[in-house]
Length: 207
Image 1 (tube, rainbow, N blue to C red):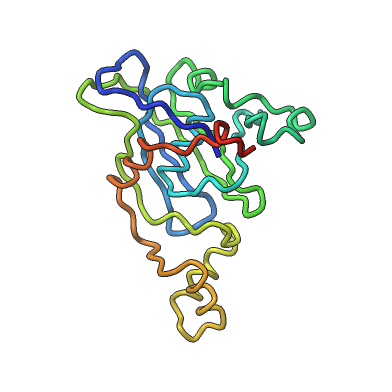
Image 2 (cartoon, helix red, strand yellow):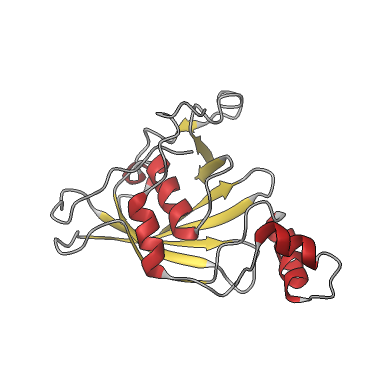
């Protein structure tokens, strides 16, 4: 649903590069990604999180930084004023990070129904390397859960049912999601998704 990220060329070293670890909360073993991105809006960071993790961008999202909520005015327009949102489409990552460059944590929530909460840890600021094209997924572990599986509380039940042919929900889950390997993760594939970005739903008129 977010607007398409502009591709950043190899030789563009005008923006700082931030190394970020994304960790899905309340799930064991941990599901996480480590990415490098140039300075961007929080809206663009949302795209990087979605594509690095493997979400489908089918639900609403928001950031919470120092107790302040940030969201897209078009997507959360019903509650934008009531919840005192700041505009994530015009707020840059560098606007909210401490000038000291110290490690900094904030929250990202995806799907207000399933409430997938992520810890976003900015590990540091790096000089851009001319030989590297950003954004980039360096590493990570485990597959992103399927959409609409019930959040961190429903996911374990989903895995249990999928692994047990005798489970009463096995067939329905298998028919719904197809085969699923919770350990599967490919950083190269995640990088390709990040660089492709998401479709431009604004231009397509899907608000």
